[in-house]
Length: 326
Ligand code: UDP
Ligand code: MG
Image 1 (cartoon, rainbow, N blue to C red):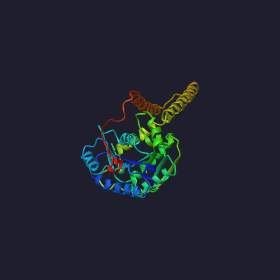
Image 2: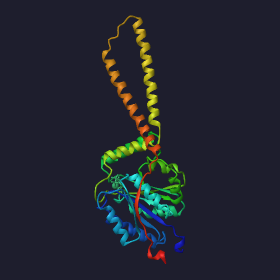
Image 3: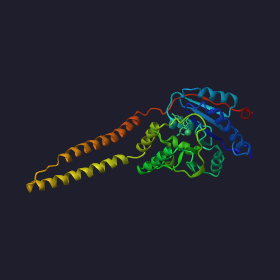
Image 4: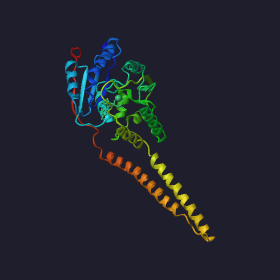
């Protein structure tokens, strides 16, 4: 096969304060990409693109250095820290202009890079979207495992269709990315959007490793925010639940009213001071909860209506290899 027929694959890696991991990550990815090119599976135009999500450390300097040494590495510098999902999206949208397919993965190599070849194979078989699904969670802390499972359960209960144990390690073909670019929402939750694109999909199983250096950029607070984001940007079930709850409570109060009227007619006095106090607190709490949920949606609508850009690219480091220029 001549190089012209080979598919161009880009890897997209969002990076936020990842100076500790980049040299090792880039070394391993370079090995994988050279191996795949050697086997004649991917073209020489294939690239490894690091998206710098407004890091406060030397991440961008390292990426620029990698690019200077080897055009295999592409740098995309965002003007601000916009969060993992937006950084990933910026990378995907940049990569789709060059690549036939793009694989997204984390900078800390928790996603087993050994599986990349399998992704490519599935793409060459004609799949448009390939999901990386972790086969075990043995390396996670028990807390992370528990919260992650609760997260998927809750998400599916609330009507956001997500694939269990699939994070953002996935391959998307160029046309799947074109489809993705049509989704205009500012509140991005890629795991929920991608399954709704609808092209042919497949799954690659892999072992997730521990982060080999640095610390998680997803503390519990961000994880919770991510879960709320996922649910509220995908379904209006929480609002419906509250409506049903409201109807239920109202019916109970009507029944109670009838009951007390009957009791009153028969001349008994009502002695339940505690019940009244308890119901005042109960109803008050429920009302606040309901307002909170509705407020969440109104806030979301407000953000969407403003239609602000999801990210701002400060600069892109991309150049052709000597071989491509010939
Ligand atoms: N990340 C990012 N922007 C952020 C937070 C994280 O681009 O605001 C990147 C981070 O550099 C990493 C990936 O998202 O490549 C996943 O983050 P991390 O490994 O810290 O999350 P965890 O694996 O602990 O869930
Ligand atoms: Mg990680």
